[in-house]
Length: 471
Image 1 (cartoon, one colour):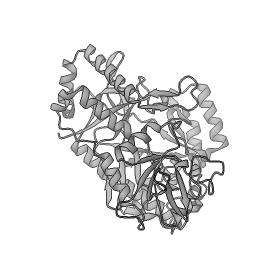
Image 2 (cartoon, one colour):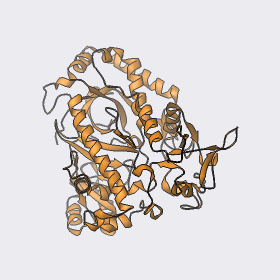
Image 3 (cartoon, helix red, strand yellow):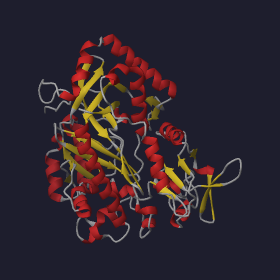
Image 4 (cartoon, helix red, strand yellow):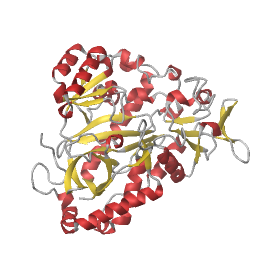
């Protein structure tokens, strides 16, 4: 399967967006590139930008490998993506408001009701509750893959607590420090205004009972969480307090933060804690990460949670397969961004086809994430295929399958020199009372192993700076 290369297309003819970068690569000595890569790694180590791998006994924290060759998108390419992202996130928010409210899409048969009602992320506590300003998914990370010059697919919707935006920002900072000569030859759209956009979004969704200057905090599970670096990074950039559950208390359905000057009311909480841990009085009673009574304060209209509780029903992979119909139903428009063709294994005919073609397909758990619980058929051995065959026969409703796409490649600096590696893209989309915004680009993830299609950091993937240029 031949992949589209974003630098050279389907052949050897250089695409115009990469003209200046190609000249620079041809002139740059390999030893200089190796030195800059070492400097970038040193920079990341010094600032402590690491992530944890759960279940890895050899190492609790790792650096995400950073590739020093940027991925380049043109302004027209980004404009098309941005328009599609706005449409999709609008539909996601309308879908969430509907399934927790009038349920018109279920009555119309757009999506099977059992996919919603039996979904582990569907929270009965949210039924008929009017979330502040009608917005459920304030921060979305939409994973995009490319297969040719004109075609982008949505691979999945991350509507709960999408991570990685700190790497997007730090990647740009490293590139600015190490390669000023490259920026001198390109007009690159900035990403450093993301914290300002995020803060404005959070302020805009404060409860109506809040003051004109709402108090905002970021709620983290703590230092042992895999994304704790990002939590502290964002709190610092936003200029808000980073808090754990024990730092907050609820009195008379109002949330307060403990301070040296006494309790201080909190109006908006950017939470990075999963639903089941956020309030032991409502969800898991054994949770020590959340805040007893916070759901009561939320439902009383005295605090806004971003993202809303229950948004996970929208990023389920089985629900994903209905997104084209969901977009059309709620917006009245044809989807701008396509879905990857998907077989729903819950349907007997689809499951029979998947079972007969496991060696050709990618099979995913509907609730899986991080590259886990997934079979990449063309790269799997017989034992792995047989394991998934048993799973599909025993619990077909727990899986979807997709064709193995030839993900686009970008030039990447690896041990053997500059070589193509497969990439995806996670743009970050913010939804507030004043509309939708997203910084140009996003986080490009790269599969560093030759031929690999798995870009997740937990599976050995790295990241790149993403440039949107005037071209």
